[in-house]
Image 1 (cartoon, rainbow, N blue to C red):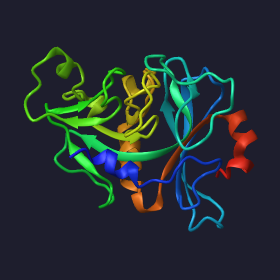
Image 2 (cartoon, helix red, strand yellow; image 1 turned 90 degrees about the vertical axis):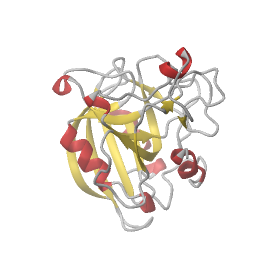
Image 3 (spheres, one colour; image 1 turned 180 degrees about the vertical axis):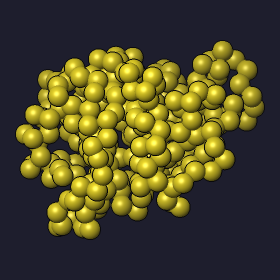
Length: 240
């Protein structure tokens, strides 16, 4: 069962502001579009009319080695800007839903309604832009045999990927080819000394706290923006 697709099909359509029913927000600020460092915070509110309260952070995170670029999420990117592309080494910026979790452990500490799957050799995450399954989780009925299947396998025996939470940039079932795939929160490398190919990474203890905190019934979102962009759009987008 491709758990992520069913989760995302139930989410609201693209709009100009944070979804009214969103009561959890993970917010990361960078100093510039080219920075691979960010400070991340947790926010909650009781309803759409209530003020946001900071409940956690700052948490140090690492981003794409070339910084960030506008992604495909639940925001509308400004016209004429640089957009996230496959293999560009940038993290997608904007507002994104947070999907399911994957990892090496048989079970993890999480909300009962957050989908979780223990990764096996048959689990794929398709990063081939030419595939009709681009940027989606697939489960093979057999052990990967072809070179293509092996190349799409989700990583195992790699501590940095032993727990990951999907950031719904360019999500299925209508992922745009070449617009970027496989964007997750996961464990950082080198104690935070290394940037990423586009994911948001952090210390393992902080990732476990994030995964345990996420409540799908509160429509959690991830907001990643340079500080000046965040400030400019905060009121219009109703950001924390």
